[in-house]
Length: 420
Ligand code: EPZ
Image (cartoon, rainbow, N blue to C red; front, side):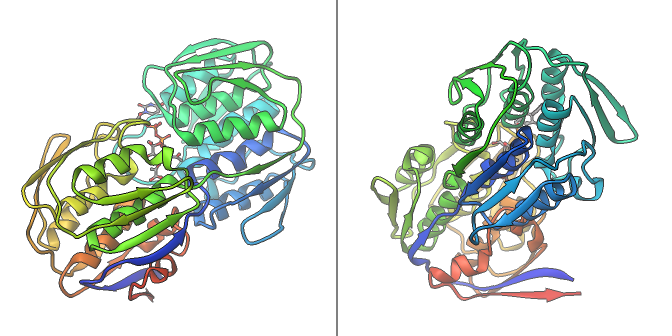
């Protein structure tokens, strides 16, 4: 059965919404817990399918997991006894690559299938491997299964050739229990990396510099128990801010860290959206009358690639020509063909999309092919004339918790249905 959404056009989002825990923190924090043999408590977990899969993987490895509330978990890791996560689960999400760093740290060996996840063009993991090798691991790829082996892990000086979120976190995970000091240079600075480092430090790791270009890790012998609250999801927050901006509604987005949204807030203001920002909230008010803009995606603190499709939909509303340049992923533009079915005038030139705004969109039957592109279709549907159906909603469910219920909180008429 295929999950689908039906959305009626010309609707405004209005009201208030509390933002859930960050997907890209949570999907690293669960694997990170494997580094201890004790019990950890994690709060503010988003209830998305990527997290469901990780819970199944951790359980298969021997962890005992109990839900304390809808969004908090206790994980007893004393029974973890396997370093071979089930391939049929691993291939369902990208973040399963974090099991490499954590299982390598804990057992000094891992057998793992190459990770799945959204197709955003080539997504190599050479920088992850470079880090593991520098720490003393041997790496072998056998019929799609990666085998990592180390007699012991020893601190090293690692310079990343590419700023990578995944490589930064994965090397950090592997280095926490290594002997001696590890220095990782040219690392990514995303808030989710700081969140994972804070969780590891709460378990007894010695990590400094997360959130800057250089992370220094003094290896420790073992980790203990910890309690941690996952930070709010800046991409979910950005999704609702952009939705309100596009539909001309007024929305209060609560329980956020506004600093994490600086690039998004700045861009929204630039195109003419009015925003009030509080300590942990943002209120967006938009007349729907927008100016064109140039947007370039970059690693944090630049404009996030994960909101590039949403921004593209917003810019179809502005009068004039806008340019979006995707600098993080080579081919994260699969949403364009679908948006064109709605009448969007978008031309792709290399890594840039030229958007001729100010033309009405019309409802259409769309196919979500990745998580963020899929979410952007909901915004496109809301501003269009007529009815839109989105198929492939499984992709959206990987990173947004019950997306239709969330939009309904903002007064939107949206239905989920299944199709054979
Ligand atoms: C993380 O992916 C996120 N995923 C992505 O979230 C996000 O889009 C991306 O960071 C950028 O912010 C998770 O956190 C699970 P990268 P990741 O390594 O770690 C190249 C979402 O929708 N690269 O920072 O895979 C790579 O090809 C998603 O929530 C190498 O060449 O991204 C890309 O061009 C999808 N070699 C660039 O670096 C490597 O070894 C940045 O990728 C690693 C990466």
